[in-house]
Image (cartoon, rainbow, N blue to C red):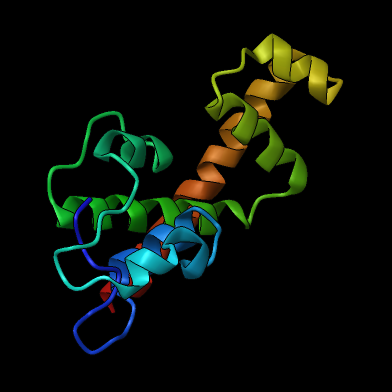
Length: 140
């Protein structure tokens, strides 16, 4: 990625803030001193497009700054939506999203696989409703 993390006014770019939020780190941690002091067009963030796509859970590389921003916004929205889940629902959904089998999740949760399926289905419905509410609030 070849872009200064600052606008010409000296403020942090929205894209930089979104990436730092997604990665749960500070902007200063994300961008070293050399990157913060470089002029426009001279900054190179040590992350490939494939690495960024992996971080935001996208299977293919984003090709434009707008696509990166859209994927970051979606990831942030998903993380906010998951905060409405109970700890148990969130854990089951997180484990399943990490491609764990129902049987493996059931062992961790000390339950059976049918119960894991039910918890996952409930969690997905809850997240869908939360995302729909967020999208409705944005359109107002």
